[in-house]
Amino acid sequence: MSENTVAPISRKDLAALQRPVLEAYTLPPDCYHSQAAYDAEVKHIFMKEWNCVGRVEDIPNPGDYFTKDVITEPVIVARDGDGEIRAMLNVCRHRGCKVVENAGTVKNFKCPYHGWLYALNGELRGAPEFKETVGFDKSTFGLKPVRCEIWEGFIFVNLDSEATSLASRFSEVSKFGFDAYEVGTHINIHRWRFELKCNWKTYVENYIEAYHVPWVHAETLGATAASLKKVVYHPDITEQQWDLILTPGPSMTLHPSHVPQFRQAEKVKQLPDRYRGLPVWAGYPGFAVIPMLDCTLWHSILPLGPDTMEIVVGIAFPPETGKAYLEGDEKVRELCDAYARNQEKIMGEDNDICERQQLGLKAQKAAPGRFCKHEILAWKFDNWVAKMAYDDQPQGGGAVQPARAAAQNIR
Image (tube, rainbow, N blue to C red; front, side):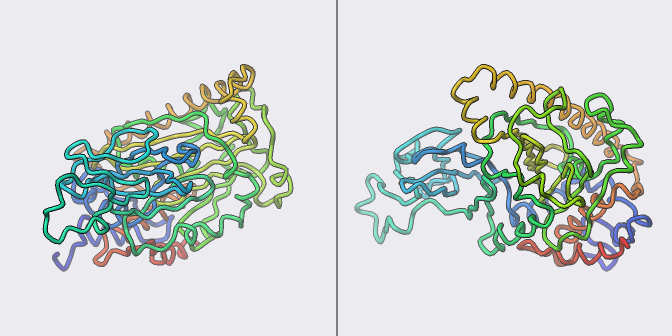
């Protein structure tokens, strides 16, 4: 690395990003499509951070499993015979074949290549024709474990064995009353997966600023430029790895009538005025939740390449609603499906604008832009990415203090 550069961003551009938000410049366009930036982000962020891969209700019973590729790493998430949720590399310890595909219910995992048999907890139970193999010990050839934690009903995995716990990253969300929304009890009903032609950072940045809402969501949300005056950003609410936008006043529902159709959590009504409204919460690198009056909207983002990404979006409902839907209650199903149709319109607008932005970022003469006051969290997030992935000595294991220190310049 030369004295004047910090791959894949120049020291000049890095210094411009690190200025106070209203003096700063955005990340250079190259950071949204170059292989160097992508490789650095994968190595120093996604291989070290907690990534959401699903919900606990996806695997309710022992033997249930699903698979998920976290960038280059294929993972099995399963509920073992004791009911515990575990994660393991989906790689046979014999010669590296993927053991299972998709999702299902099994008593054990059998590699399709040479029949190696694994228990639900990953232990190797059978290796045909290996009795004569010298020094072979089955107990040392189980599927490689992957760290797994459950938070508010969401399943997270981390490929770094030394990373700090997920719980320690999000332990302060009670500051704004996240627990009052009972997200962990909700049952996911609707889910979408999109592969988008845009860099993953564009979607996170879009999520944590309300500046775009009056223009992108004017039809679906009825927002106007005047509505921006109500939005409150909370850049200093925590030193942990998350951020919060909150629009004070009445919260919202995804039902097209704008009237909640299902039970609302009682504790939400008891929140202090400062935190009563619509919270938009993002946990980095790519997870976000909007707890609404009578449902939970969530997003999980993973990069697929320098200019492609995957986003999974779900809507979860209070447990009695979710159970009624799954049991075939026609009225409940009709109502929940109306929520889903409305959300499809909203996320279609976000998907489209992020892909359009990506087209512009790839122009040869595209250059860094500037931030306004409504983009304070996007600025903060970009500083976090730069410190974690682009700096001389990237910070692993969830170290967010350097980016948070830069955030003190907001004042």
